[in-house]
Length: 289
Ligand SMILES: Nc1ncnc2c1ncn2[C@@H]1O[C@H](COP(=O)(O)OP(=O)(O)OP(=O)(O)O)[C@@H](O)[C@H]1O
Ligand SMILES: [Mg+2]
Image (cartoon, rainbow, N blue to C red; front, side):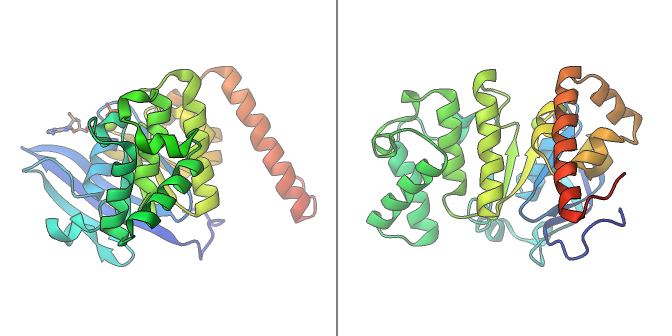
């Protein structure tokens, strides 16, 4: 842990020594991670490294027969010690998930309005009218055009990018404080990916939402995450602020991932980081490196 780390920074979720085994296959190995509240924690790493399994285990959605040990502390409660019924009360309500394919979280035959409001009426106890009002506000927040018309339509009437925005609206409808977004832009056209990432960042900055962003794409990570954890072979091999991990990677695997990023992207990133540092130094009275 770095000395500069803020001592009173609150933690939204704390994973301690998480181990997961399926049929003698040790899939997660001593995964420990503090997710700072109101920040984007990026979980990066190659395919099969255990990113999705980590996210699913937080929600108690690990494969049947998996043996799990460790602790996942969420506001003083150990999620790993909860029964399925107790966990079900947390899923969607306090901790929500956004998947790669937005159609996975939306029913194809039910109007968007019903999918958004049913959820809220059930969990938040809202009246039909209040739920409808909040649904429109949510669609405005995720910047879907014509929110009122959207409520009447079905999923197939939207583009992939718009559907992911709607899926994000469904995910945040019950005011969870943590979202686990697993490759939320991987299935989307490259031209709409940036918009979805900006939306997640915007939600984090304006509503205090905490996001665990899972992606194999370190480029996406370097553009969005506050903190980055890099996984390999079921372990966290690197953990730190985005700046430290991207600029001073310690693990050779992280170095190789960063070296494979397009050079232009890194130059833009450095400019952005430099501007941010200049801003901070001005505020702090203009100290030099
Ligand atoms: N249902 C399952 N049963 C048994 N093993 C599984 C199951 N799902 C995943 N695994 C194994 O767990 C390991 C971690 O998989 P996981 O899906 O977490 O990887 P990932 O980092 O999310 O990869 P990707 O980037 O491809 O999504 C892999 O070795 C995978 O084969
Ligand atoms: Mg995955």
